[in-house]
Length: 336
Image (cartoon, rainbow, N blue to C red; front, side, top):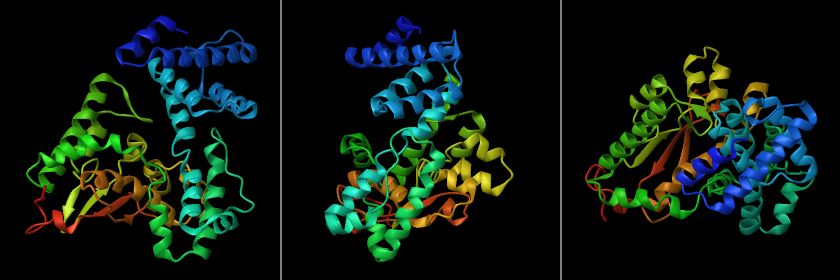
């Protein structure tokens, strides 16, 4: 392990000393595991298969904490082990979503009804192979759809099962309030997103789980709805950037294009295997997309799924309802 180099890398990013020490310990534990099981190996020459084995060990030993996964992810990024970065993201994406769904059902429907829906279902632990998750999702959705009216189901699924804290989105609200109108803000938002991707192109760094090249940047640059949004009447339409955009753009097979587009670890592998999971689950993603707007508008908003790969579409597209008080004339000017 390049402990000195990694420490300097973290210090430049204002990572606390306590966190750095925790990261280093986890990486050293991984290298001990490598040497014990695979001989003279360290992180820099490890493979995704090695990491898969270590994750299985973490699950079996009860050491599969989110902090542990984040430690491995950050060091993998530091040593440019891109396939391992992608692998680890697959384990931790939306890892709390089902637990949050369980808690939301308890709060909205009562503990007995929640227990009825989750009866016989064991939620996969953090670190579960993503290929095993869609079966759980399918079962839960079938029970929910047999129990709830569609409107109620969509409201629960879009309630924020996989979103960040309010503080993450406050800078967006400030930029919105400083913009001329909604359309102006959406253009600026998209421009900032493109600049971010261009930075990744220059630095040859990863954007979450995927590599970004000029073709990917151009794809986003040419469509404001991706990582920006386009107002259509009283709604904002957003298209989710594909999870693996390079692969998505070059893939000819439609099923695999939908697979590369999907961000959700709870259903992605179902696309490849052919397992049918209800598209209503994608209202969880609608909740992710509406969350910034609830902070920006400082009030609850509604979101709907327009297109989703679970229905056979090649993209995931969402519509956010603009509150009436922010509409004027054709809906392009906000009231502060």
